Image 1 (cartoon, rainbow, N blue to C red):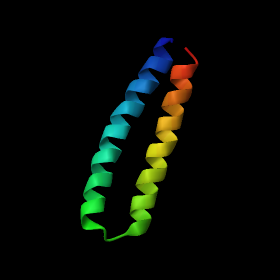
Image 2 (cartoon, rainbow, N blue to C red):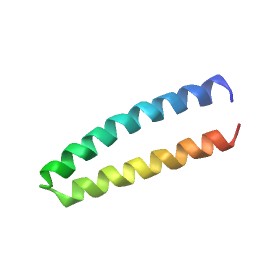
Image 3 (cartoon, rainbow, N blue to C red):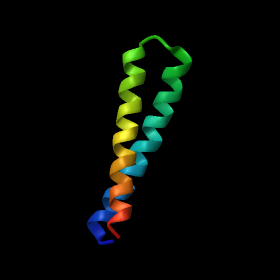
Image 4 (cartoon, helix red, strand yellow):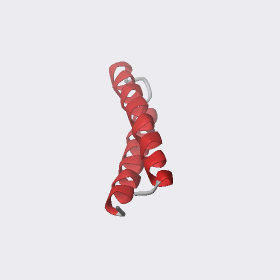
Length: 57
């Protein structure tokens, strides 16, 4: 894994942590179901990208 991939993976992990917190807060309020879907989609997309980077070692 080169520096660029390692940095991207680090950024993805930080974004995932933030999105998971936002998702948890959004679930507690449950005002907007579209917002929940957006968070879940974003998390799934980032997790897929992280898995792709890890697999390319």
